[in-house]
Amino acid sequence: MKKLVFAIMMCAAAMSTNAQVLTSKTVNDVYEAVTNQADCDFVYNAERSGNDITTMYVYKKTNGRKGAMTLKPHLKYDYSYGADGTLTSRITSRWDSNQNDWACAARHDYTLSNGRYSAEYSRYNHTANRFDKPVEKMVYSLMPNDDVNYISYYQRPYPTSRYHLVSETLVADQPVLFAGK
Image (cartoon, rainbow, N blue to C red; front, side, top):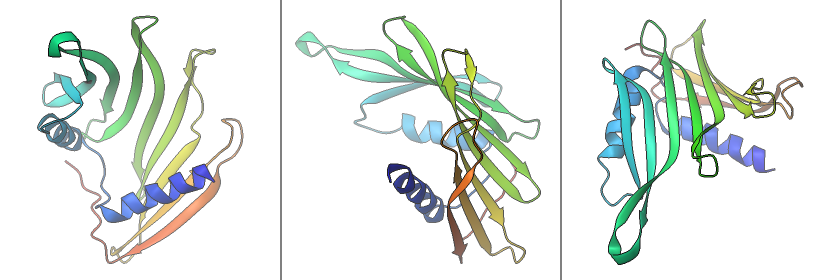
């Protein structure tokens, strides 16, 4: 039930915003938006290669003694882009205070082909020291009349099992942007 609720929320989120291909510009815009928030519990920093953000760091603000604020590492996102500037993957790492280092947690892979934009989610397998096969996938399809966006959400209970369709949503009269840079 919990996964179904998540799938419905993901589809609702996709319907409430313009679906778009994620690009270097999208990542930069998100970074600018979060860094310009006032009264936030987090602080952000980024490494760049040219105009592309390659790594984004998220630090959690904590209040110490006598009102002193400290920043503790929280999350790290590593971004990879295709030659055309589209986002191809995002790797998420969490700070492991016991190891005093980043611990890989998950990866999102993005692909665009034949009018379909897919986002797949994989967990990191610490025992095997690699990413497992994806366990969730969202596919955004542009319909032939160019006015309708079709969203399919798939899951598989185990990385070795097959995907099964969890939900499908037909979105009419929503602006859909499958844009390049």
